[in-house]
Length: 391
Image (cartoon, rainbow, N blue to C red):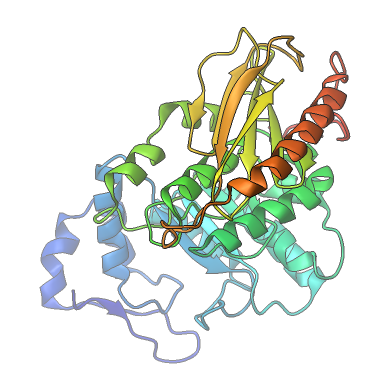
């Protein structure tokens, strides 16, 4: 475009305008055109492209996000927001940004890290614009101590707890395992306006098989996770597109009660998830984590005669139930496939393992019956009651 910010010293914030940019600048709404002619904060190449992107994104009914850091440098070494929280927040508001992802690299110490997140939260609120504040606050504290989730919930709309997701099944299951291992700490604080963020959906790329993509979509929905896509929509395949647009899964994710789901049972490779829904309903997900190939058949006791049809993948079944931990007498057959990788289409016959699988399923059924005895309890089994929701 030929328009950029040219630093003329450590604190320089001068905009260089060229004739090639004037037509686009003059066509902008006055509030945006002023941004190109004033003294914004960042020495950021391509300012005009940012503003042009904002116009294009909002014209399509989409939201615009931007990245910054609580420290004096971002993770990639660009200038951070440390010491400039107010002016950065105001600039983002004037650019009509809808989401700020605020990383935590290059912080001076833990106290300054925490204060930085609080100060940016206050600065964003002060602008008067509704900007979703996506924090990495707890991610940087866990190596040292358990984060204060009361504080985090008060200042952030969503927060990352664990490491980045990559386009592989091992990465996805690693995040799921971390969440399960810490669910007693993090689940009670999730609710409307404040969400645990397990990172983005890698659906539509190349590292997950179609069945693995179904698993990520469903478990992310059960965890009430923000559904942020990491893919190139120009090249996404039809199956992945249909999965990302699946209304049944999205309805579970977006349920207005806003409670996060949690794992209630695990026997060997089988996991059972539960999520409370509005209207005294529950969603259940059963996953088979076996990755050697083959199909397992089991009878399951978590389905209810009052359940609506859910969303079934080859190895995952989800049901949104009006029953509250209801144990039904009639059992329903459930087929759960393994999680073969995208390159493992021709695997050897593993039917000799099925007898062992049948024993695992029997133990799983017994575990589910134990959990179901919590019927009528006022809070999820083994989990503390949720903290008051952020207004």
